[in-house]
Length: 429
Ligand SMILES: *Cc1c(COP(=O)(O)O)cnc(C)c1O
Ligand SMILES: [Zn+2]
Image (cartoon, rainbow, N blue to C red; front, side, top):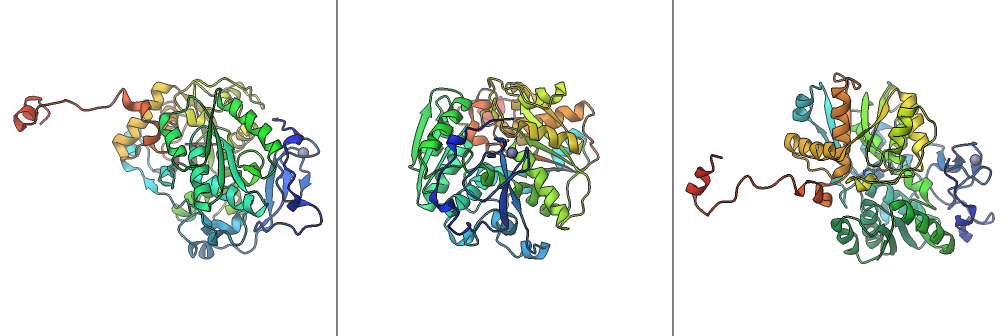
């Protein structure tokens, strides 16, 4: 159970008991995932009773397939299921989502699968799934009176926060580990916010952010003090998968695990769709995927533990390199409850996974996509995933962000003089 100091809670006057409750759509309260105690909607993330993490709870109005389909081609088509103000569509934002659900015939054939899809979330505005969570966090943060968007990040979140703040016309403050990929530093700095490189791991950066959140009351650290709202953005991945399959749930989903939030929210989204009658509640299994060099959740799963012991990350999959994952125990709950599991793959397997997806489907994934594809293959090879079940594998980020992962292993077949004869001489014709 991660414990968050109450001192880090924000104290924004907008949440005083005398002011009107915020307009966060169908959201009604925050409830503790450990003890169930409820807290009014506000910039809170830790339970006052037990320090457990808070989660948004809802009273949904009428949401139908038709009302969703009549909405815009971005995550706001699911506005009625998200903790965002009614004005969200009129406020400048990056409008993420509506990414392709690719029927992966070639990859499926190569792996011996009957029906495989790749949910390609690299097709978001800053080329990772993080645009979804940041858009929801930004909308909620503005409603709660914050004036600056901030985050500690392993890279993709930095891109998404800096770009979203630029579009919204507000300040951003982004903290990253100093050893981050050059591409991700440049693709954050270019948006012009405040970017600070911290000498340490992501977990060190996260600690600094938690301390700063206590001192700067008007800074919304998207994944710290407004985390309950931020996390809900991941539900849109699940909604899109179900809608993309023609309003039904897949039987198996392979999901990357960093903090673990995404996997647990895909689980939540499927449950909501079923309870609203938007899909029938057919069973599904969730499979968590980690890099062996940072696999605390996989290790806990394999050992049969309910808690996750922190590790020091050492992997090329930097976007997943969270050694102390806040939602790790809840990932264990989700995979065990649905009959799935958590597995991890080596850096070599990750590179092979990136190349396999690129070669078979024309999709260039970042290392996190290499992790999920390699995990899919590993589980199939071991007979631990059903090749005949409808399966979705997530690619959550763009390969151009992690060029170094493959720079040493792919390149031209030959370098030749500028003549057709020289080409023919290579034997490649
Ligand atoms: C952040 C991230 C994830 C997973 O995030 P969680 O912290 O587990 O929700 C997956 N893929 C990419 C590319 C990411 O940047
Ligand atoms: Zn509690």
